[in-house]
Amino acid sequence: MEPNRSFIFESGFPGFPGLRRFRLEYDETLAPLEWLVCTEDPDVRFIVVNPMLFRPDYAPRLTKEHMKALNINKKEDLRILVIVTLNKYYEQSTANLASPLMFNVNDYKAVQLLLDDGIYSHTEPIFAEEETC
Image (cartoon, rainbow, N blue to C red):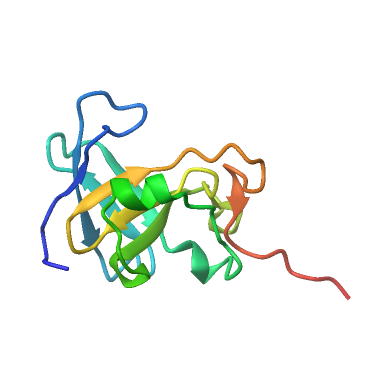
């Protein structure tokens, strides 16, 4: 993946009409979190994370239409991230697993899926609750 290359959300970014170009920015101080920054309006930015880091079983159902829209020919071309909502108390931070961001890392196309199957939550806890003895 080329640094500073913008991904194009051809259908737009839900909730932000007219904004289509976003770039991923890695910041060591936030790792493993990253920034998704709109290149057309840098004030529009989101914190994102790889959902597999806290939900290894995460497997949103992708249709052939999704794969075709992103021009995905092999799974190595696909990168999945989810938007994070940080809480004042970091251990209460959540991720939106019901609306994953899909990126083609070769063609620089992207889309946000809006899953309506009820399997995943918009407010999935990132940190597992500690078990009490």
